[in-house]
Length: 389
Image 1 (spheres, rainbow, N blue to C red):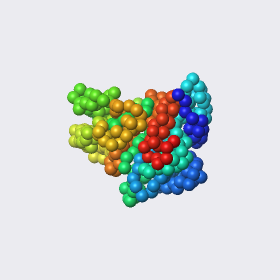
Image 2: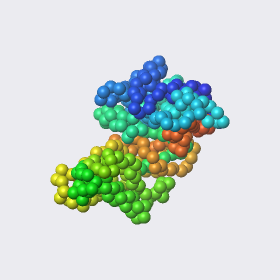
Image 3: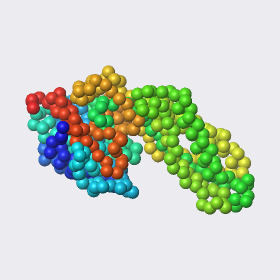
C-alpha cells in the first residue's frame, strides 16, 4: 500500500516549515489558510498573546450544524544535537518509509487531511468537517486551550473530535494526564566548614526528590492499575536538577523539575498536595530554625488532563468503522484529547505512525501507515458526504 502523490506532496510542504516549538508557526498557518481560501473555505485564526503563533479553525460543509473535528498540532520537537542522515526539513522516501521531522508526529496526518479537502468539497458534505490545527502542543498543549476557549462561545461547535497523533491507526480511547512542577529551594549560605549553621538547598531538594521516588514506588506496588496501559500505574519522575556554585560553599539555591503521569481517574491535585505538605510541614520548620527566609516555592510548568472515552460512545463506534478494527487501546503519552473532552467534545486518538518513531533522529512513518490513513479518510467521506466517490 502506498499513499497518493497528492498526500505526499502536501506532507512534504508542511515538513518544509521549521515549526519547532520555540519558533513561530505563522508561515505554515498562512500556507494552510491560503490553501483553504483557494478552495473557498474561510479560516479563523486564534493567535497567542503576542501574535507570533496561531491556531487555525475552519469548517468544511454546512455551517449551521455540528460535525466531526480533525485535530492536530503544527509544532514539532527540536532536531538540535540529533544525528540525521537526511535533511530533517525535507521529506525523503526510502525502503517503504517517509523520513522528516514531523513525518510521524504529526504532519503526516495533517498533510493527508489537507490533501483530501478538495474531494470532501466536491462530494458535498451533509455533516461538516472541522479542521483544528494548533500550536505548542509539544510544550504542554498550550495553543489548543485558546482555540477551545473560543469554541466554548461559538453557537455551533464539533460534536466529536479525532486527534491524529500516531497510534498505528488504532482507535485510542485513553491516555494519562500530566502535571509537571518546578520546585525552588531557598537555603542559607555558609562556608562548607560551617555546614551545620547553614541550610543546604541541594540536600533539602534531595529529601523531596527521595520522597517523590517513594510515591512512585508506592503507586507501582499498590496502584490503582489499568492494565490497558503499557505502564499500568501512575508514574512519578524527577528529570532536572540545578544547584550549588562550589564545593566549599553550602548552596543557597536549588531547583528541580518533576512530573506526575497519572491515570485519568486519579486526583493529581492531591498528589501534589502530599509533596507540598512533606516539604513545608516536615522539612521547612527545621530550616526556619536556622534562617527564617528559607523554604520552598512551586511553579507549575505544564498540565493537561487524562482521557477516558467510553468504549461504547458514538465517536468510538465511528472510528472503529473507519479503521475497520473492532478493538481499542490506551496510550501513555499525552495529547489535547483530554482538553477537548473536558470542553464537552468527545474525543478519540487515531493517526498514522508509531510514537516509537517520534522525536527521534531520522523520524519516519511507513508509507503503508499513510495509506491506511487515506483509507480512513475515504471511509469518513462516505459517511459525511452527499455524493458518492
